[in-house]
Length: 132
Image 1 (cartoon, one colour):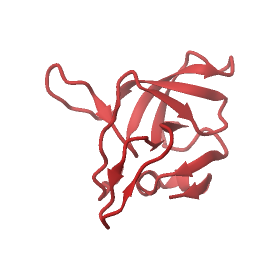
Image 2 (cartoon, rainbow, N blue to C red):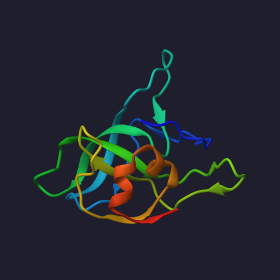
Image 3 (cartoon, one colour):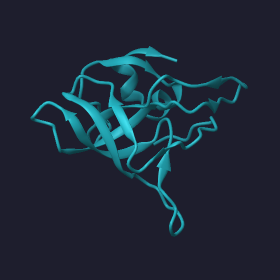
Image 4 (cartoon, rainbow, N blue to C red):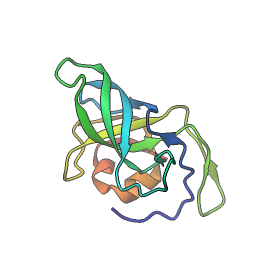
């Protein structure tokens, strides 16, 4: 996992709801835990764009419903800053389901993908339709 230069605000906590942006069969996801989070006692684990999370499927196909998957966050509603001074935000919180080798499970991503998540996980860019 590569480091990114942007100052991404960690606005997604454990229990946050996400839209599944790929065609893997899942529709709505919920964050169970944040991978690699080392925090202090009584703090909520949180993440932002290009974060790796463990999610469970709330709505979707009966094959994937109530299953747990690793996901990469590709969009967030909360505004964050890029190194060139621009600020960016999206209209929803969205993630893509990946496997252990960080290969996306689906074959196409619906909607825009943040540039930070493409830099950190290059295999996402192969199936992305729009990178912002």
